Length: 302
Image 1 (cartoon, rainbow, N blue to C red):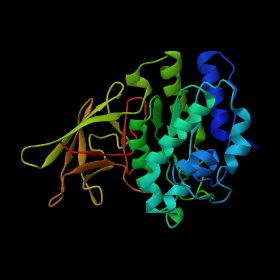
Image 2: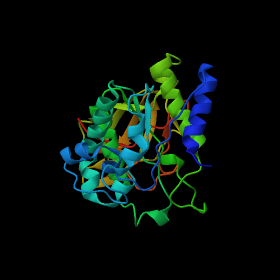
Image 3: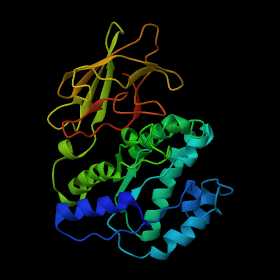
Image 4: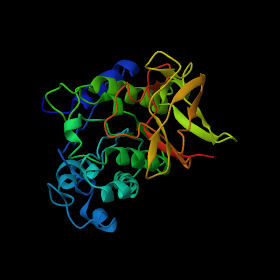
């Protein structure tokens, strides 16, 4: 009970999948903002002027620095809730998380793989405190595009149920571990394929000539895209601008393609998926045949 449930389930699944014992170092710090997890010098370079619940760089000095020099196989990073408390932090998060991973790799002396967990949802009770979770998810998605050997792992659908006593922490860590291990086995052990092991990823979003639909192509779909509704219709898509999105109806029309219907009067500059603070299996229904959902995203429409 004194360590990370996610780390435990991850290690157990990875050991079972490889036949090799797995050692895990847990450097968890409740409520940490990212500047507390990096050296003070790096935090200053990125423009930070203080911490939140600890001294700037304080958690790094205590939890990370003692292990610099060890050979690690990779890092699972699950952070960003505290930045979801205001729009300014959410907007700057891509640069900050990019700077963090760059700095950590320099300290350890090599570019170890990173598995960044996209924020899960919490219950509606938490929205007053974490009002910009959806913006952080988009920031995490954008940051992953900038960071070499970084795999973003979806978890928005693994939040606590509304009746669960803890409205800010999820108990569904084993399923999250399954998704991470699936990516690690492919990335680092050549077990599985990209198509079967990684989250579905949008590769294009094309507006029809009449402006009424957007055709979205995906990769990493396994044997084909599925909806948790067990129908062709799929909830979770929206169309609009970066500042305003309108909920859109959508349907799976082939193994790797979703057709999104543009709401009347909506602008069509951007297409988003799971762009809400509180997301469930019912409100964002797309997944691969291996039951891995896409990460929440916002992309430009061609």
